[in-house]
Image 1 (cartoon, helix red, strand yellow):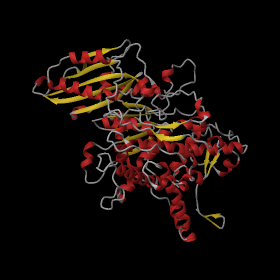
Image 2 (tube, rainbow, N blue to C red):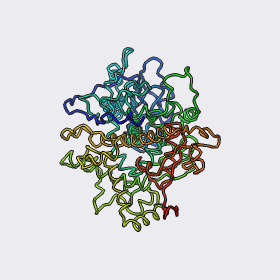
Image 3 (cartoon, helix red, strand yellow):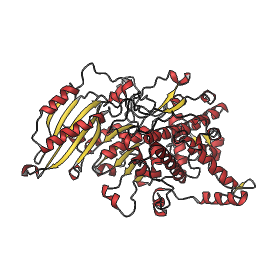
Image 4 (cartoon, rainbow, N blue to C red):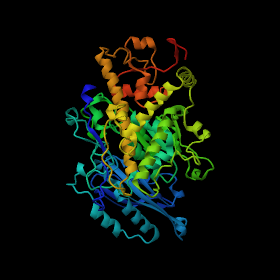
Length: 598
């Protein structure tokens, strides 16, 4: 298996071309509706049009208008319903009318078939929906504009979603090897390996424009969230209105945690789906669905094809605090700060926790990787444009305004363990710091490789490429700067997809090597006392072949923290999920004359 991967396909970032500035074609819609707020009846559908069999009543009113919208003037809400992606534009406009309590609240929304991607490209309708909602909020209702919009954009029976029109920022793989060409697994056309056709740009309301905001919001916390997404956990983002940004984050995290195509055939046939399922906005009315979805699914040929992702993990956002309290519904809870916290004297970070309220923080390695990533993106931004961009990340090297102070670092980063302190101190004492400097240089080289050829840094040198042969790939040459080209956003996607290839590719090598050594690793794999969460297996168990041995050097090659118990647990879970094996993660320590002292 390792030998077959020596000729890896060329990894490229497919950038939207500046040659075609035309407005992209709007995807056909399966439903259009207008929802009004009535002081007696609550939210009601006052006008609707839909295709055959599309259910609206008792569904879109709640999905389109999550709790708390009365506190904001406007919002864009994404959701999913059956086989459709929904988008509604909400407006809360002041009016002199006692019957509506001096405010008119309404939403205009659409349903788009999910066959057009994980959001059906619904964002392309955002401008039209916002315009109609604003018109209805400030003047008498003329349903004629709704009827006209429906007649123009309704889905016809012969409507088919052509793969080549998918608008999803992605990395692509040129000339895939033979072992990948016949891959038959079902996957969405908007998966990470989907081609972005020449002549396309990201639409103005494309969720991927928020990728740099995602990075600035979470800082190094993005990495434990990414790892949870890679394990296909159920991730719930608890937020406040407006929800557009949280919906964008749902989309972004789903995209970043995609499995790149060249890795597909290295994984177990029973591995999780190649993408994390985005549910976008959910509320209390979705609790029955979440409970039913969490039940194990049996493999059956009678199962509907549209249900192949059921029970496989998801990511969603909610403004209903009761969902955050029900920790049986989710595996990871992300609580975003309230909007007004942006004006606080010191930064308020998102809070991440597992079931039972166990806090989840970034590792020391995550912090170093984040600083490296920000520096690389800053170089890319400086090369892209001579002017400052609103999405340009802050310069982590600025001494007058450091990204982290000591108090902030304690909030989001795991403390340095005593073993790590002892090891670093011993290495400096025993080798005059040479060993520690060498290890840090290797770490920096691996981080640089993830952004190789994107920022014009020396990381593209052959010396760096030798550190990670799996990632020895070049990114397509970047054209002159254009504000619509989303260079930084696409570089971020490529970065995380390369990181996924680094992690899973390393594990694939380890598993194959273990198999080549004649260790079937099957004994104890299905023991009843194994819940798949233990990070370490006793040395006696490892010697008996109960787990695949993952050394501290392997952990470092994956870009993980050799001192972090959470990262060791991640490795164990990843080996189980993607390769169907148990793992023994070997910790790192200090040895003096062959005797381990810590």
